[in-house]
Structure formats: C-alpha cells, structure tokens
Image (cartoon, rainbow, N blue to C red):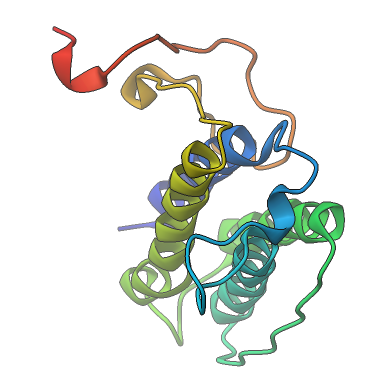
Length: 163
C-alpha cells in the first residue's frame, strides 16, 4: 500500500461522506439510533477527530486530540477541512514512523465505518441516501472536499436485486 492508494481511499471516503451528509434533515444532528448511542453530530465530530489523527500519523506523530462540537454544520465543515489536511500530509509522507497499513487500519477504516453508520441513520430518520454503484463513481485522488463529481451512478430500489 502506498500513498496513492491511501489518497484514493481518502477521496472515496470524502465522496461517500459528502453524499451521506448532504441535505440531511434540519434536526438530523441530534438523531440517535438508541439510548446510549452517539448522535449523528457526535459521529461526524469524531470523524473530524479521526482525520486530524490521521494527518498527525502521516507526519510521524501519534497524538489523539478530540475536539467535539454540538453543531452539525461545524462538524461537517471540520470533517472536510481535516480530510483535506490529511490528504496533503499523505501526499508528502515518507511513512517513516507509521506505515500506510497502520494509517489505513486506524483512522481511515474507522471513518469509513462511521459513514456507513450515518447512511443507516439517515434511512432510520426517514431521509435515506440513494443507492449508488460506487465502483463506477467518479472519484479522483485529491478531490476530498464537499465539491464532488456531479456524475452519479444512483438508482432506485434494492441493489441486491440488480444484475
């Protein structure tokens, strides 16, 4: 695994996250699936923490510094700013202290899991994210902000029944 593959993974994360976060209902940030579980805004805030941690790992530091927020827009903006910083750090990383696999299995894999949680929560909140053929998505290394390709491969219905 090299920095190009890690950067492509970050671009994939950004693409999927942008889709899951876009047009969320106004009260969605406070939504939680069950008592004791995280709210949507707590999950997105944590995703920003993960991206900051990943950036530090790419620069050779192992430092966890959570910065929680209760505001949906602030958490979403921070996530995209942090993933951009992480991507720039990966572009120049020599991985002397933390190899790509460690960076992937920690902050990146965790954030991918959380995007899935947000997508499930959107459905449970009555604002489902449309299915898409992500293998056909227009994802590009370095495109890690809110501005993602307008070309989508979305469809209606259950993907398990598509041929």
